Length: 178
Image 1: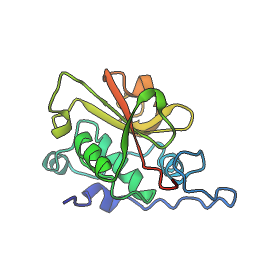
Image 2: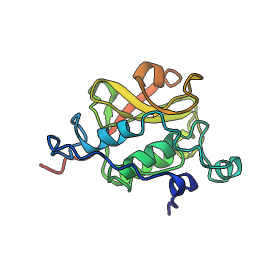
Image 3: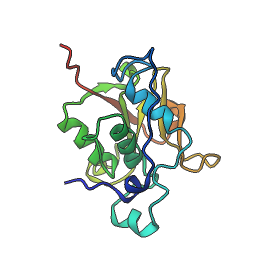
Image 4: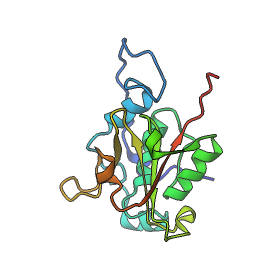
């Protein structure tokens, strides 16, 4: 079972601004709740309140991308999508009915997954993987490894955010309106 991370216990709750014009919870629209949650955390270091020992003991990846996506999805009401590693987060999303699609079909609100196919163990916590949340304009919200933002939650072009990962795909939330 998944425990709320120490980082999540200390993070202030983000109150998403109520926009009277935005009446949708559709994550695939620019005013959807997942997009608003991702935007609300822009510039934050979602994992920064953890000690080094906590990070190591909890099996966090090098850039804490999965835990950061877990924080944003929780704040958007998708709390069952969570994991300390990319593999754990992917498995969690798949259990919730998320389906795999090619990167060329990416929509805002999709989970973007990249991995190194030479590491056959990436889905079991073996590293060499990255995850973020697609924005409506083709960018991706993620914990960036760029030196100028020091592992903060930012929106970047997908080719920059996933430059180290030759295999990429998206996971999409099931459409319950059908």
